[in-house]
Amino acid sequence: MSDLSLVHNYQAATKNPESAPILVMIHGYGSHENDLYGLKDYFGTEVHYVSLRAPMTLGFGGFAWYPIHFDAVGAKTSDTAMAAQSRDQILKFIEAFREEKELPENPCWLMGFSQGAILSYGLALSYPQKFSRVMALSGYVLKEIVPENYRPEDLKHLDFFVSHGNQDDVIPVQAARMTTDFLEKLQVKHRYQEYPAGHGINQDNLRDLLEWFRGGA
Image 1 (cartoon, one colour):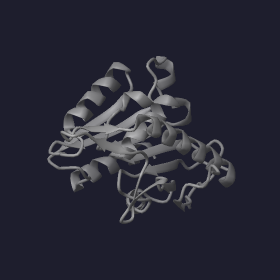
Image 2 (cartoon, helix red, strand yellow):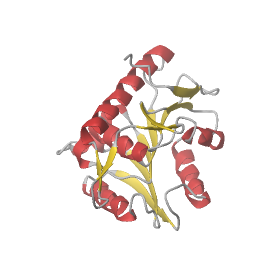
Image 3 (cartoon, one colour):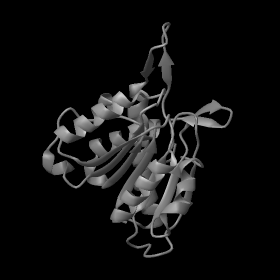
Image 4 (cartoon, helix red, strand yellow):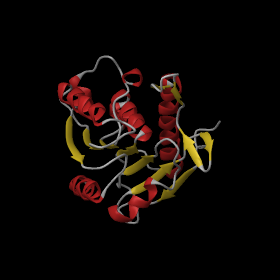
């Protein structure tokens, strides 16, 4: 499998492309590369947008980055080995993409929803030198795919926007609250927002995301 073999959508920045950030969009379980990609229309033309499709086919037009298993009583577990593999496959894609598009020094930002948010945390906290801004929507830190120990100086440049619906019945809001506690202990800059919503992005969430996004664009 070549590093650029992940199916993806790409829209190049039309303003200042040589310095524009690269925004890598990582969808959730059961979705596809066209999902988050639609948000680019809100964010403007000064960004290179790259929206990835996960390699695992679920059927009915959906894809996943790693399997989710349910036991006899309905408890959910993630395939953490496959999650780590997908994390590293995305990193290899980003590096190959930079080379192909001749964007070696452009800042790289991440946006992930649900399973994509989990992988965004995994990427940014495992390889912090590769990333700067992270939008983690309706996800949490999966401890098995991030390091056990950190050097504070490696993380001080990171900036997270973290959001979650307090009525989420897919990933409970407690998981997001625990993640913000985790970020606070690491002294990582972040903004955390909760909304009266389920597993999705409502209008208030989008408004706050855009405000945060434009603050660093």
